[in-house]
Length: 178
Image 1 (cartoon, rainbow, N blue to C red):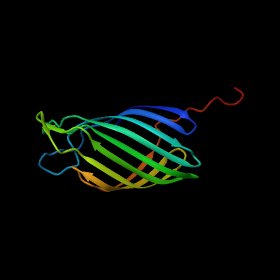
Image 2: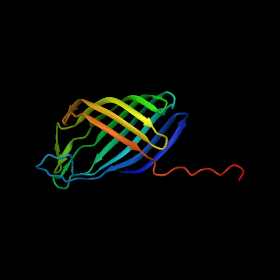
Image 3: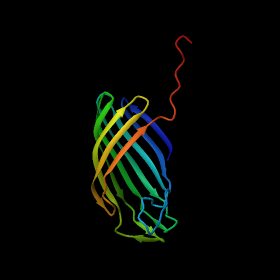
């Protein structure tokens, strides 16, 4: 869930955005069964920089800090981590073809019951192709990211399909002659 997003247009085709995401504790968590639920909330400040020429180059990087809360069931707290998501592509009409990826580096140790769990810092790198269609009022993005490297976590591949639809539109300006 995104709490706030601020965006500044620094120059033609260049923008800087910042915000705060919150990944809430969701799903059913069990300390004894495999599960994708982690059992904790994560606060995630984000800063992104993007250059997007509608008739050419589109490159961007999004920097995210994962500040993880404690799992109340297990008294376990995953360490704080940095995630860098990146994209590079070329706009051709309504289409964009490119490359996307993500890098994660956990830079503080996990803790349980106040004790440090050493040698357990996660690191991952994934990269893959992306195709985007700009339908005017919304965008459709399909990308595949192959896990190239993983330490202290699973190496995985992911397919992402996202549809971006604005929640509101800018109201039309006054009619000519009014």
